[in-house]
Length: 489
Ligand SMILES: Nc1ncnc2c1ncn2[C@@H]1O[C@H](COP(=O)(O)OP(=O)(O)O[C@H]2O[C@H](CO)[C@@H](O)[C@H](O)[C@H]2O)[C@@H](O)[C@H]1O
Image (tube, rainbow, N blue to C red; front, top):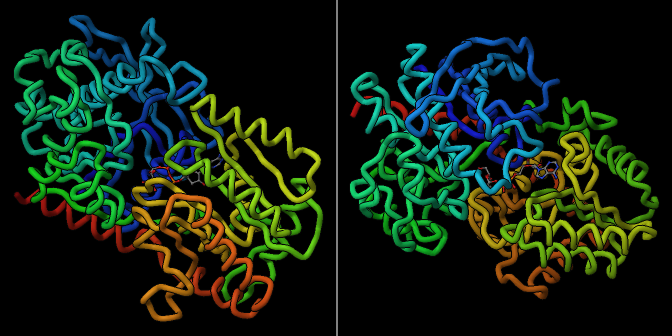
């Protein structure tokens, strides 16, 4: 099968969070299974050029229709750790991708609407006719709309799988984007059976367009699929998902064990595995050295992730002080687009600067994240909602015990040591349910208790976590089944 991924991220060349991991990991898995995969991305000025091999211009003169005119683009090709990636570079006055960050600009909707249009125009012009186009999140929700409304006559056999990684951001905009992409016809598209938002009058909802027009829509865990359809996890899209229930489902993400694996990880001091775990203690020592923390007999609790209300940052804050109060150490690596939240953690960093038991790194570092996953004892993930939650899955591979709130995909992956109904060998972490300080404390207290008083049992829990299998093998097969299903309909 020939699959083209159209996405705003791909790890590690252009990664802001978990979406990037999924694009890379799923593409790799599909290739291992013998399918041909190409990835179409924006050419961000700030992308990590050192992760692209052989970057050259593949197509010089792509003219993308835009606002009754056309924008000149170049399309670059390069390998990202073996994956075939095409980068679209528009030469327009707006400098859509010629900026420091990937997201966070007032014209984000314009930028990614343009990208969706450019990706379709590129496929059309160069004659690429994939069996399946797989697009992701609001940024590329317009891709199936454009395919069926504009390119259908030249690409009649192409099918679209659309994956939602985060319902919180749906790409709400005015009818302007209908004109810029030359879809026009606001009365037709603003109808609620198409792109018309159910809650904001006269608003175009790009994510809704993705759901309505795709041949199949997934979100990134079975539990979150239920939350989105039956609860408020769909942020208003629940009724649309119910209308399209026959083509909606949850597929749990995988973790790319070629990237996240203590047996081969180049960023940790000694390799280790469930059979030979001593290297984990070397990583703990290295982490303390690197972050100027003292060497003491205590567990290290970590947080790695975007700093966003989604992640329960008020509970991260509380977990930090609770851990310190209990004699544990705390490490944080995170950044985000919200100036207030970033500012709060910068302020905390300053306040705790001389404390030898904690370190806060407000920024982004792929390399440091590996050392933290390996060197910490526990990873706290107190999210308000979490469609999948890759960080606990990654942590488990490194024998770091997840302490998570039981929401979204974390219900499908983390099983409480004390209260799960799973057999003992499948229990791999701690789960709490309420979104308050007492709930976080109770879970951390149980984890600390085991670490201090029953180290042998804590070690067993680590081994259970390391042996939990969250590779791409199963989800890879699930996506192949979905692709097959929509191709033959
Ligand atoms: N400051 C930093 N420095 C270095 N690395 C950092 C970092 N901040 C985050 N990361 C990395 O980014 C990834 C984040 O994974 P998450 O599952 O938390 O995804 P996220 O919430 O971004 O995306 C959404 O998409 C993913 C994928 O579908 C879902 O798992 C998730 O629930 C949903 O919210 C991990 O690889 C983590 O190590």
